[in-house]
Image 1 (cartoon, rainbow, N blue to C red):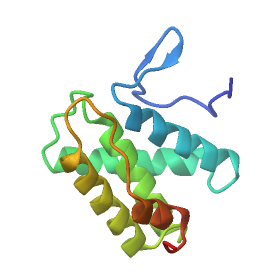
Image 2 (image 1 turned 180 degrees about the horizontal axis):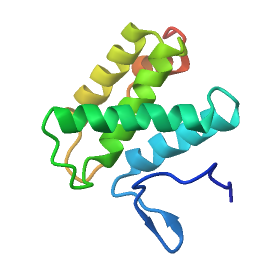
Image 3 (image 1 turned 30 degrees about the vertical axis):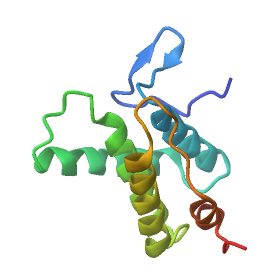
Length: 128
């Protein structure tokens, strides 16, 4: 098991480690950890982005009950990737829209999947 670099403030945990209410939360967590392990950012830098995302949400009226923690996590990840030039704004917007459309078209209880075009965008290439 990968050891997390330092404490994560307010990370929902149980005796086994982090807990996630939805699969996307675990995926966002894993992506962040993988990018850190590849040296794309220091953990202190990540903590600053996450803190800023939480503060911005609170300033916008988030009641900070813990239910929106991973929304803040995702917002911080997106902001950091944009700031570092790892992802282009239009690519991120396109992927966000693809997920939104896929979610709207997916019957309740079924896994949400992206079409081939969105998967190609996610990989950074064009659909063939």
